[in-house]
Length: 291
Length: 253
Image (cartoon, rainbow over all chains, first blue to last red; front, side, top):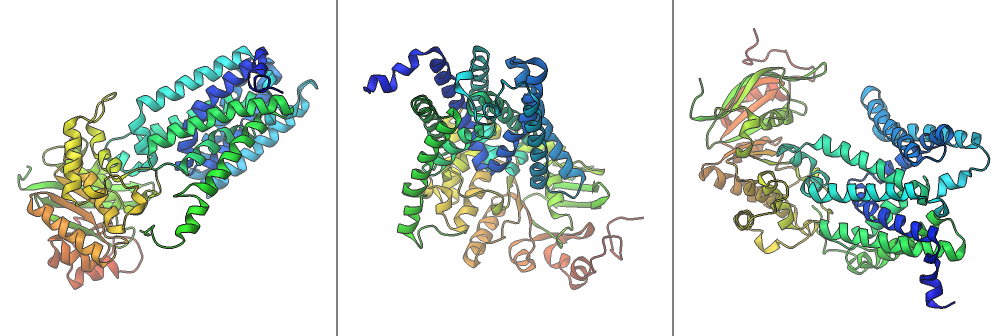
């Protein structure tokens, strides 16, 4: 197989072109969102949130068929319900927020799996869970583009608020920042991105596209802006590579993208000179004064 | 009504969280250019008082004035230093990046730092002696240096009233002495310093005045008077049953 056959020829198929474009768009916004999830230690919450989208999407599918708009609002409703429900549970009962989130999302996920199993047989559960790149239609591509533009715009316009709220929410509040608003806006943006990523990545794997580039970039960068840019670059490149691997190896697209990103992450975790495992072994003691 | 020598005044301030009372009918004044330690056992209302001064704590009764103004309108005069362990020091940011945050509140949307802003950032780092560390990631600093980064960010804000939340927490002996030195220099420059402190020894050696809380006000004034054995007994040894025991002052009917 020539280089042309391996890298370029697949995109002659219209669905491959759409898949690539949608994955790249999602990589841009997912790479940005992931940085905040990693730095604010919301990684596991993001994971729970992504699982909780399933019943909303399945219900939308059941009632409205393959309409992208319906799927979008179904997922959005389920995600926001989980976020809101666990916030309420943790405030009004003894249950702490992590346990509230963990309990609610698994109930939602269970309901989602039950719903999907009741759907007409031609719809495959694995498509919901792990993504199906063949299924990316024009509407979903438009959704990915809109979400990407919105996410980039929010990061550009509110860059300083995002940085302050992520680094030091108390100081942000003290200087007149609307911390609660920024946080809720961020959660909503995360849900939007998860919904948009669902067709390509599936609900189980969507978060990998957000987290893995960010956590890899975190291992290399000592500046916030550099981390954002590197995270986006890692996400975009690996989405393209992952789509090609998926095409040639006949793998689920979500899985192959996550695997490519996983390789980058593990290499970063081992070889990053300052923050990786080898670096830590080399320095072993001293150098990093403890506060 | 306002006294021009008093920069912060509390009049009958009461704050409740649901059924829990955090501050009950607290009144005192803080003179301009003074250093004041806010003292009291855990849960006595120190943090609530600081938040109230910042203007982001709703009061159930009473009022607070910064100069002649409501705290929210006095925000440009206030510089805030959070607790050092409230942030993740592994965050990908340099010393200069943190100090620049002090200028953020003054910036308009779509506008970056002006040369004037950058000048203030550099001057603040010079003042705190961290200009040579400007491009370091913040984990690569000692505890005392990290504290000075936060102080420099507050200086860069350009206010004249400094509010510090437990600034001595977790500092070693050298770091504490260094911080004492810095705060005293600030007061000599005419700045007003208000800090939540839990160590009475530090309060005596570093602050001229004190505000001792136990939900109600136990005492306010010169630090030696505030920290009299009788007052300490009331504030710290009066058992754990909440407020309303034999507290003198506090203005309860």
